[in-house]
Image (cartoon, rainbow, N blue to C red):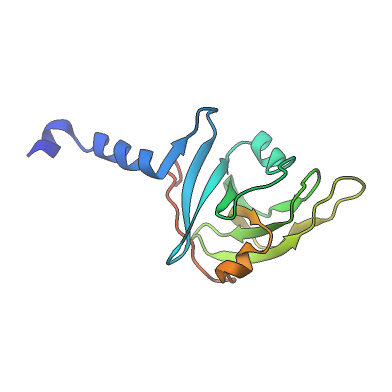
Length: 153
């Protein structure tokens, strides 16, 4: 059998590459399946610097686009909209990939005190998408989303 000859590692690497890719700048992306027929592409925010920057300074993002914050541990996560030019829906997701909270149409904040958004439920992931899209997609608390991260536990 050819699979034995070459091993399973090339197959795993091939599958991982197709679900988790990098662009020419090195930014990592993942496909996220929100509902049966709804797929978006999300940038990955994996480091404290990427978590802090998020979608700041973006003037626009496509409808089927977002940013997935992947945290090292399950914990409380709070977000603000400082230096964010577009409204966002912020979706908190537990380690089982179930939505635990959605803050819809969080308003941009370019100066002054910016409000914080969060929930007193520990999460592993947070997804930011274009404002109003959570409602358009019919997302609600308790929904499960699907994505594959080859490095995730």
